[in-house]
Length: 245
Image 1 (cartoon, helix red, strand yellow):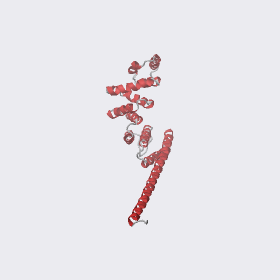
Image 2 (cartoon, one colour; image 1 turned 60 degrees about the horizontal axis):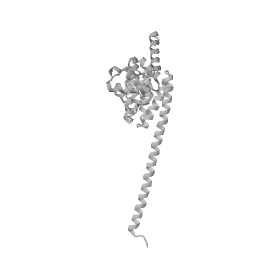
Image 3 (cartoon, helix red, strand yellow; image 1 turned 90 degrees about the vertical axis):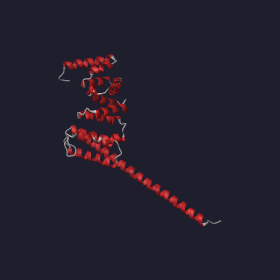
Image 4 (cartoon, one colour; image 1 turned 30 degrees about the vertical axis):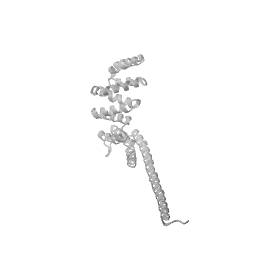
């Protein structure tokens, strides 16, 4: 029995629909391949930029090297504006550049505040990144900005990374510096961080407390007799050698 006209038309429609599906699948695959290639290129440029900038930090006179690395970071961010690490590293390196007095038209060393602006795109894309909140708080400390924004960054660092030692050590520096200006809730979070670090690296906590004149607040938190002895010995050494310390 032969196909009717209706059956023939239906068969043509099904064939065309199948071709359309294959075409759309091919277009989607091509788009994904191009997207992946662009992001891969962004990662390559970013890695090269970081390596170049780290080298330039060790060679302050190499302005051309710095500019080349900074340009690579900028290209990487343009290729993949959704990557949270790209603006973070722009903030990190531009701040170090300012602190190291590396002058250029794009980032003068006295404009440290501008470097902080790179943090916010990173934090908008990854708002629970405790490490970056801690870095933001520390850089605002270096800039002498002890305000609510600094304390907010400190609090978020302690909330989102309560068991990351590197983040906690940064938080101690900021918290000890502004201790008298912290509210009770933030003080309790900082004390929690101190107690946690005392279990793993007590000497480092004690040394940090001494640098930031927080030894009297720390003493009641020391449980191990060896830690108390270390604190007393360090204080005795400081009192004997105040200039050296």
